[in-house]
Image 1: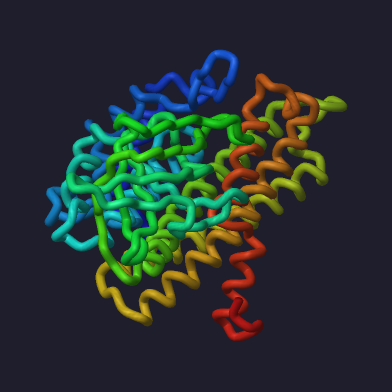
Image 2: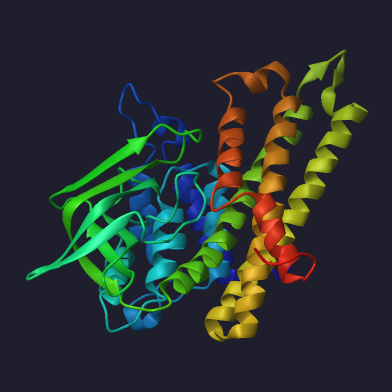
Length: 383
């Protein structure tokens, strides 16, 4: 694996300091009774405005720093380790990835600048009713009016719904699907957040009833553009999963060195040793898979073409499968290391377990991506 540069080490340190100085994820756990949406606005302000995380992937041509996906992966890993309730995955991994693939003559550059300034939280409505990736326009229709476009329809499982300012989505038109941007504060837009398994991340639905929208992209290959953005987002999700899995392991190792049972530290028991070593192996395999996927995305952005695209798609699929399994394994096994303590609400183990299960299914299951890898390798027929 490539070692971090001095700039990347400083970026990681800055993000860690911001997280350490925040209120912590438990202050913003999802709660339907109090109406608490999992979002730490103060932490996001520090990350986006002071550190520049929100604009990290914005090209220099759009007034951004043009950071690499390797830089963004460092941020994703730190946020995953702390389960920080901020809209990094939605705004940077999804929305920014989609917008930087759009035609520079449209509204994309202007929206990117808004995101980069840290004043706009954006997301992409890209999941179907099962939570799997679905960027089709069948759920929303667009109508051309004399003074612009209006959208009607409903999208579910919208990441960070309830806190976002801008939603990107595909909608059907008489001339084919187009990419639109909708302001959540606009008239005829209803956003509801939903109770989900992951208490540290917000999901919800966006209902449109003749809502005004701007056309961001008119392209025959809109589905292709969304697929490319998905591969990019998968790489950063994998980095997040690795960061969280590593935190699960670190916490369990520390606990095993302190907990006394039968007059011995439990870390001296062979069963605990084997468990933690197995977790370590999974985490290290996942770290390598995530790093390869991130590197493939950066190579594609430097030299977009069929070869680099195929490599990016393949390695992102591998990373999603390997990292999802590793995080789920780490969260499950380390929870048991804590014994009864790990099953209490007051301990964070269940929060990591919830995040592991939620990210395992996000964008599609590991099994689905293993099929993609097998089909790419010619082991099975493409589906």
